[in-house]
Amino acid sequence: MSDHTSKNVKPPSLAIGPANYAGQATAWAAAVRKHLEVVAWSFAEAPVGSGGFRFEVDKPIHRALFRNPVARGMRSRKLFANVTHVALDGFEPYFHLKRRRKFAGDLAWLKAAGYETALIAHGSDVRDPRRHIEINGKWSMYLAGDAEWRDDLARAARLHRAIAENSGRPVFYSTPDLRLDLEDGEWLPVCLDVNAWGTDAPLLERAKPRVLHIPSKRIPPIKGTQFVDPVLRKLDDAGKIEYVCPESVPHSEMRSLVHDVDIVVDQLLAGSYGVAAIESMSAGRVTVGRLAPPVLDLMPEVPPIVQATPDELEETIVTIVENRDHYRRLGREGISFAHVWHSGKASATALRSYLAR
Image (tube, rainbow, N blue to C red; front, side, top):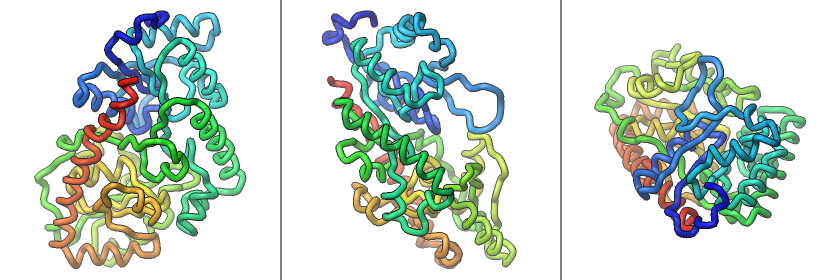
């Protein structure tokens, strides 16, 4: 797209990037193609090296190629050729490497070039740590780190919220708790191929149910592994469960791993839920997590996630083991919930009005 003089008569087309956290830019683009029949694709930094969580992206980019100011405009126009809409996720710059303060410059360039822009927040990019602690108390993930770490996150989040507020552009957020930080935003549900995660594997039929928790690799460990791991090891030692705790799992192998367990213990310190919980529900597994009461109040439908704080986790797992029929039904409810809210249709619906601009 050159000067966009004919933009208003062109059918919409969408590029989403550059963060692509958990492959969501790619998933949202696929949802738009499927449910709205609009051309859409994701873009993100080309992966370097091997290992870790690597997610598919439609158009890999190399930020270093955008570093030169002279080449920046030319390369950007080439990247977004024939695109009318660009949704920027994660408040990450795409041609200023990782210098987050340059994100506003990227946004301004895209607006000046005539693209219809939107912003998509994912979590700590806009979340206020102080508010999170007020809502979640001692189980806030922000208490896992020190004051300096919290202050750094708070400064970046304030900057990003200000950019969103002053941009005059549509603002979306990927997890429902972020409505507390972006009151004028709209929920853009995380989505995935729910049918692909389905399985005929029996649930809670083993004498010792298999319980999966993927340890947090982050420092500080905001997922709650420091609380979850000792509880599940204790139950394993007592013969109540079989604890599955892989050190490192490529995302390409996650599906088969989830299919081979009965219970998935997800994050207990976020006060919300994300991709891992949705994958578990899509597979019909019993999903354990924790949503803060104000977040539950924001939900159009309460997700069938078994609620547990870290100090309730042991009792919660024992209750599941001793009441299997009830939790098998809950597993089936999880599949239905994932289909309604996280199969892509709800996400495409959220983007419809933006794409009509």
